[in-house]
View 1 (cartoon, rainbow, N blue to C red):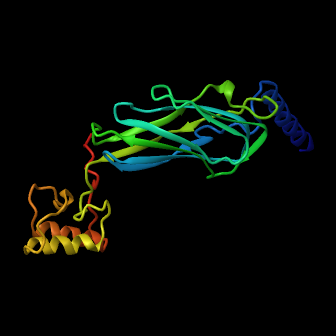
View 2: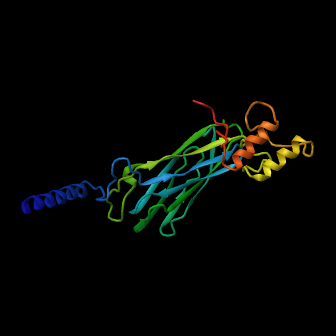
View 3: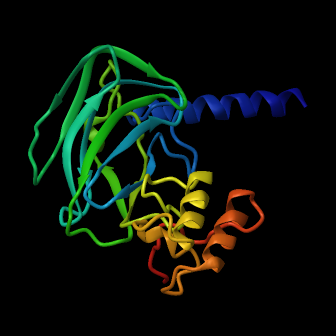
Length: 234
């Protein structure tokens, strides 16, 4: 039994030594893990959306270089902000080939769920109603620690879901609340004359009492409105 335990310990040590000799961090990612991930956001066409870049684990870095990848016919990258207080941050502000770098002479240790960067996008007026993916490309040789050892990197993609209006948002404030129920009821008896596109809750092309009932049931969690951002079916 003791020989088996000793053999197991020696095997683990050998694997760790091999990983370090290849320049890969001993805290390499397990299959399916991501070291960094991007947020999923919703945004009205013509407005701006902030995509947040988070760390998914505890890891030491001294250099990070990323190139945001997205559909330029839908999104325009307006700014990149760094929330890492240590080290140096640079962003090339190139509209067609954006790239940014953070580096430090000593390691910075990230924590799980830590917000590292914020990418602000303008959703162009010509954008389609859909979910548009965003990710960060990188060269593995640019992700390293203070000793120049490569740190394995996987990035989980984020997205911006674009929409023209929110189904059930009668007062056009981009949320669904009791105020929408009140406004729709007033509209149905002529006390309101202007309401948002979201008033057609059941999407039958008409605004009537059925929309009011469906909206009120959504508010009290009896019947949720499906596909509130009117995304295309696949």
